[in-house]
Length: 143
Length: 413
Image 1 (cartoon, rainbow over the protein chains, first blue to last red):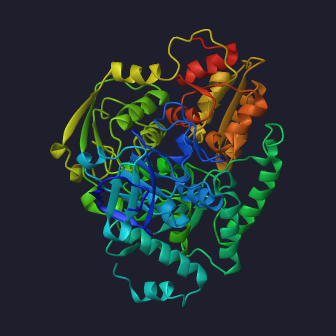
Image 2: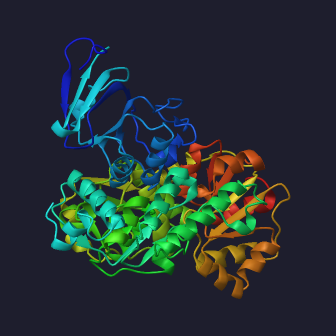
Image 3: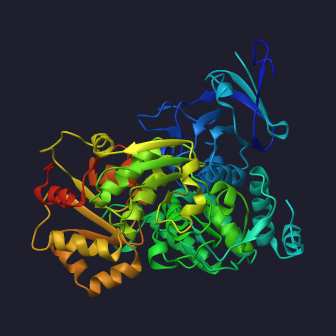
């Protein structure tokens, strides 16, 4: 962890992970995610009013969602978002689906999933996080 | 992953840059999910559309064309964002429509069949039991896995395209017996009369099953209920939409239902009239009399039988002056429906039948702004779910009530 974090980091184990190591502020949702169902893809802002991240911009964050929702749009959508600088630093899911992984790999955005429920509860928006896919670890610390 | 000699050659670039990209991408995804090998597929179904690809996706497709890439198994295209014949009248972005034409030429050059349908399982190809596929469109995957006994994961656009190019997919998830086991038993204790009821069942169960790895198993769908392909289509589309569910089982419906071991399911859910009403209540309860500016039959595209039913409900009637009625289907069903007089009947009533599109793909944020639409009345729970990401108020009603709302220009129930 870098100077952006404060205190001792906790390490959360991941069942699956892909991509390079990244770190940044954590944005944690309490509900699932799909770029088709929840996101204005022209701005990268969550626009579903009922979503816990309504109004939030994903770019610049490691974003965490408990589940993946619905459709196949993520495959191209993440690639398009990345090309316009609107993709998040990384995706972390409690449980992902195949489409989120297809999309993240296509876009070159790190992704991980498979977090125990007890560990999920440790993730809070505003924390500083480092995703280390090669080690299947997410380090988190208060800021 | 263990690769065959041919797969190694693809990965090394000995078969061209297209297969090299495709195999490298598939190996990365396969290793993520712990796949041990790839499995041959009989066909692929690709989502590729300017609404979601953007210029980056278009440039990527062009690179594949430039490298001479070509699919090696039959590969079909999903529904798209525009019916060019009606794009201007609906105030779609005509520059984007032109880019879509470019994309379609690219896809044709790659060998993709531009059939523009999300109901390929009804109109193009029906896999047999155990057949491995690489399909996009989640509703199509759920139907193929659950009703026909095919085997596919949700394949995103580039993933299905890669599969078409290599003729293979990584063997994980719903390609494997170990994941095709019931996790939740659903006891259905309510009569399902309308497509919207079947969708409401899928929506309610999907909301309780927020995981790609959940496999609900339905008891009570047979033999006391009819269960047509169109009804199961709405169930599959809703389960995939609300729960990201790729496979359900149903006693005496799913070919392999007995092998899904429903008795070992971890939990049981019971669905009665109250649960169905809960879904309807979440999409426009107590609004009888409210003005309606848009009624849509789409998501999935309408089958020939659904078009015939709509024609019979609209025969001799007229859609209200301030209400728009949109229907989407594919090119094949449109031609048959035209031959059978259904299109003329729907159009004489004031409805518009669009081909090759699904409403939620039609850049609906722009359509909302340009056409001043606010409410969407539909019998599709999938559509009601998706339009919630935009400034629409989704209202779910049964088919005849949707038609009645279109005629009256207001909600009648």
